[in-house]
Amino acid sequence: MSFDLILFGGTGDLTWRKLMPALFQAWRHGQLPPGGRILAVARDDRTHEAYRDFIRERFTEVDSAKRPSDEEFAGFARLLFYRRMDLSQPEHYAGLKHWVEAPSADEGRADGPADTVVLFLATSPHLFPEICAQLGATGLNGPRVRVVLEKPLGHDLASAREINRAVRAAFTEEQALRIDHYLGKPAVQNLMALRFGNALFEPLWRRESISHIEITIAESLGVGTRGDFYDRTGALRDMIQNHALQLLTMIAMEPPSSSDADAIRDEKLKVLKSLRPFTAASVERDVVRGQYRAGTVQGQGVVGYLDEAKVPADSRCETFVALRTGVENWRWAGVPFYLRTGKRLPGRDAQIVVHFRAVPHSIFPGPARANKLVIKLQPEDGLELHLMAAKGSGTHERLSPVRLDLDFDKAFPSERVGAYEKLLLDAIAGRLNLFVRSDEQEQAWQWVEPVLRHWEADSEGPRAYAAGTWGPPASSAMVARDGNAWDEEA
Ligand code: BG6
Image (cartoon, rainbow, N blue to C red):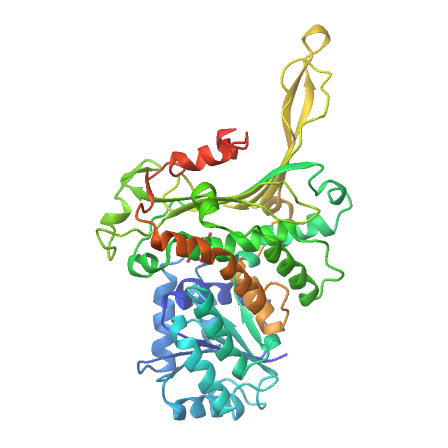
């Protein structure tokens, strides 16, 4: 199956930091279908060769394991092409259409148009409506075309709807692939396998056996060079509305009737619709926002958020959010779901912890710890099942915690693929399971919207926390009200 992958925003950060390294890995792993071309489009004038040099140089800045040797780069670079485009000019889209539909042997294709055309919009999202309208008007939206949209998809519900309307005017829902790169992480696919490929957990996966669930996405990095973008966004929009909620749907969804993309997405949508809606009172009680101050992260002194480049000195933008919610259905009624994310926390650490209920009656001396299942997303990718075992003998026998530890990187060493590599290969192959449908995305916006509105009207602003800590103490206090504790405090 031959393909043309066209990257709008072909010289931007996302393209060289994430997409090109992922495409190179897919090529290196022999996973890219044969007969592929990758065309970067951007505003400035460059030759194909100059673009390849630009990418070669940028590769020196990515993770060393993902860097090509000279020989490898020469092989990969044969797939790369460049085209100048002013995205407001209809004739430039007509030129692109010609490039796709009447390809030349000089530009990598001698045997007619590709079977599949994937248009990846790695530009600023405010350009999406215009690009989609122009693609539609030019006829670059036929059945073999798919469009991939990168977040942030909107700033709130109204702007997300506007983007979706523009996309729908040119493409069908099946042609529009919304990326949430967390869904491409191997641990998320393992979570599906754990829940729906094994009979063991399903009978326990409910309120009768589970007391509460934590989802943490912690980052040690600050906002880096993205201060201007981040300050308009904040942690709720940047991480909770998309990544954390997508993880929540994967944990809480009912078993789908098949592995068909819509069967899965229908179930995820039901979870989003069942989330307890926020009111002004529940935002006050169940949502904590924070902003980092100077501190020490992994032994390094770092500045506070307000001293970061391109951040206004009086910013009220949150760099941390912890919240408590619930899924209001028969399976999950009464089970708290705690979500937490932040920048400048003690480490890069993403995990889901499923806490099971304690034994109803203990016959052993001393306190018994309840079982828990830790699903680790990063830095390592694995599962830990925490159990109690007998330790000692005779009169000294007591219970002691042990854990079954499964490290997927070790279990399947050569088969782990990165999130963008997985999602790009899926986009080329037309596998939609791991892309977000517009109704899911709008529902997620609808759910966070009361929090955004409440904060806009609230004069207090975020609570300070020292960089290198787990956020404001109010986050621990919120969980403690239910008699629980975040995993690292338990
Ligand atoms: C992005 C956010 O979606 O996810 C960034 O915009 C964040 O702010 C990043 O740093 C985290 O992704 P990962 O895969 O490094 O955990």
